[in-house]
Image 1: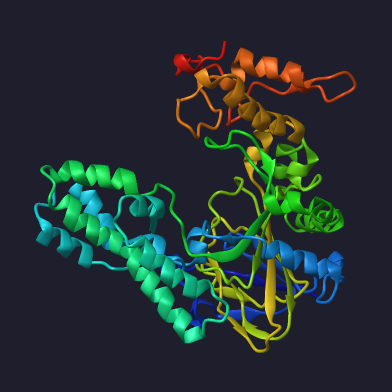
Image 2: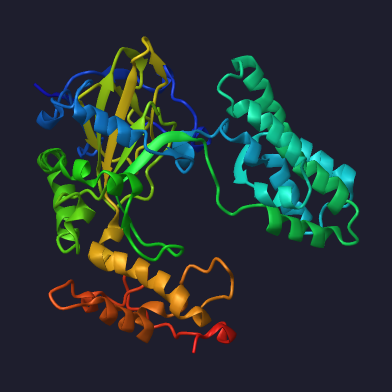
Length: 470
């Protein structure tokens, strides 16, 4: 029998709590049985099924199947999980700016910091570690840190025989030596500059990265990575490609998750099925399901967050496998005021975009305790892609261009082969023809679309004519 909960009102969530751990005060009921939860308007919000997947029955500790999913979940230590990984940063503190340093740069590049005393007051006002990182190599090149001293401490950290306490002390010393770059730059470069505003602009440009890096966690994505400005071609994620035969062998599980979603959320399933019916490659939709990707987490209790980049009007599915004994790791949905006691073989399906969610802390009770959580979700960008063969051809075209037509590049040593109008150009047409051979794949059918799927009509520019190859 399936329990029904019909909510009469939703709970307001304070966004200031995003990135933090839920508490028992965030829910009124911990559900450990088959259950459907309905919103005040009668819409099904979430469906929970204990031991809900037949195909999950064989994925238990000690089996090759369990070993594969453990490997997949541990295949990447990611720093790109944003609020889900936590607002309070404790990983890789030695490569980050503090919040105070970030404020200093934002004010100094506008000429609003007059002297060293004001600068130090701003910097010391907030010493919390931020997601913004700096270019470690550049601080070393510019003599802002003692490289020899850093390497001496690093040697102790890396040495297996170093006692734990000494390793901790060496790590702290190494971190302090690395982070000294900012104070050295502030006092010896910015403070003595004729124009401090210009110095701040140049310093930020040289040392501060534009790529935020959040808290680290074991969290990998299986499936396809869609096109982006930096990499205008799709490809299988590294763990997917590395053990593709294993990944593909779980089609039955993917399809069972899909079928259960269809049964419980027919409207959402039907809309996504229609939306993805013409995707160019079945590998983009987990072999014909409504899902495009699986995020696989190992011992990673997510903090309060929302899955804002998933497909519009979609639902997600969570599947859990585990080992040993542990407490916590209950899945909490803030606006519903409910938590779900998820354990091995359980599945939860619902809207992870509109409802803020998180997991309670993971508390192992024995040395074997671990949790694997698979999150199935959809990304609309798969509609814009060519076949995987064509997407691979796009990547290899860029490599070819860097060798055959360097005049199209910026002149920089690390130019990756991207240039304006590339996908509508005669260069792309020529390369596709060169790749096509009798009885082989017809690469001339690969489209001339840019990263968003539209036809690339931009004009080609010869940016470095002096590099042209005769």
